[in-house]
Length: 246
Image (tube, rainbow, N blue to C red; front, side):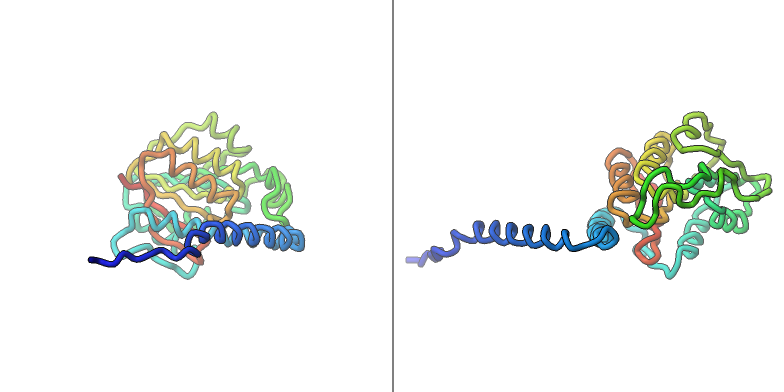
């Protein structure tokens, strides 16, 4: 006769012990939270965001050779530039500030049919971002940077206002630079963008692992869109380039 292993009586208490451990841990974290300042709590939220980002990206389709890990954001820009091999690329930047990244793209994307549009209120953040970034941060008194390249136009105002009247120019590939910082701004842009997306389009995020801001908006966008996001490259875990695939 085959012996049947008997379960030890103590095993029945494992679920309860696990629940007790979770309760004790939760109480400990509540006490620890009371000792932390806003900046340290923000750091903790970024740890959770990095974990969530890692889990999510692992479930996405991967490019041949895997997602490239770069040393800085300019290298992710170059990865995007290499994929804009069409005659009429359209570059949309949301969050221009003083125009540093926009100037980089103007210098490097020299396709004759390329067009560039920068969206910004140029009045700073409308609400709090990080604890040390209050409303009004990035204010340049409503004035776009002095860029005179004829391929560029600026849409000055808050995104929900300017996008409501903006007509998408003709293009054969889209590159979207999301430097919106805030959840509300990022969510507004992504929701507007969804009907315009096509296979091959590219999207870049400048502050992705912010749990309650760009990352939250991106995860919501991913659940809504019928296209899939493929992570092309990232730098420092913070700057991410994706391409839309079937």
